[in-house]
Length: 421
Image 1 (cartoon, rainbow, N blue to C red):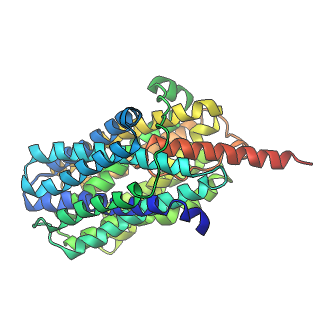
Image 2 (image 1 turned 60 degrees about the horizontal axis):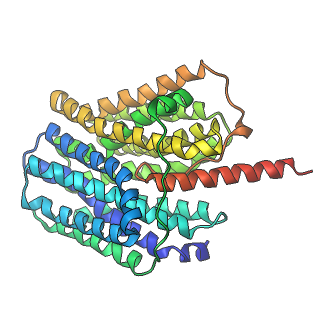
Image 3 (image 1 turned 135 degrees about the horizontal axis):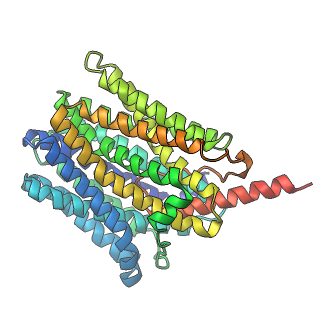
């Protein structure tokens, strides 16, 4: 394992640094927005702007890379992102923050495409699974660590925004100085939404709802914290707990995914998420339960994304998997744009616990649709399932296609072993 990581240490270090910077700005937007008097609705629009940019970047960056190469695209997007982060405290107005977040979302998506194409190029069939797992862990640790860094400054000043910008700028050093250019990235054209729904209705609907959940948790969690009167350090701990849950629950859920009907696991994870968010609604009198609700709600969100991808691939030939995965990435992005807008409206109309109410209803929607789909077709055989895909919702189609290829290879290898006399 050490030798495997040694070949991609620069990419992993760069990923950790950029996630520290990007993770800081997500929570900072909520903290500074509250100080500036932004409403929950205004902050929801700003949050959605990030996901509009992120979705656009995933489609445009491969074209840019084919024209000018990885290094130029990577360096240019990194520069724009660093500049955007440091510009936030200069003009604290909704009309300025929304396009800034859109630009940062676009750049972040493009950085993922470039970095993940390098990562995939550096991996072999034998090491791809380990490298992808290490990459996902580096991302998650970066977001969690970013919350800790927020406790060392004051969101009312420019200092934390400057630190986030510095971390993003530093992240490109180890990557650009150590990796060699790779051939232009090629991402499969996403499958049409109608075709995707026809082939995988549960994954299509569930991924849309999940995009809403993930964006609400990551973008509006800090807004919820400010509205109920938490301190900056308490908000940082709350947001960190949302992501820590995913770090701990991803692998147990992944193990279960390979030994049972994935629809039942999707149903169970969604029910746990809905119950955790319902618990969040009752934490006003019991603040110690807030972190329990965050751990469980955040803990099932990322694994559900991997489950939907894996369940979709179970029914598809290998040639259709990349296009289907691209379609799910697009569906997730649409949900991520809609989620903060809905939760922002709910928080403005119903108070801070509109945050938990929207999450509860959305998780319940996944559970109910999963239950409905279980009545429409018999359970697939567990032995016919492909391997579980350990991917994060923030990854680009490049990493998802790499994970899909690895899962297919694993499933084929296991089948060949089983058929040997």
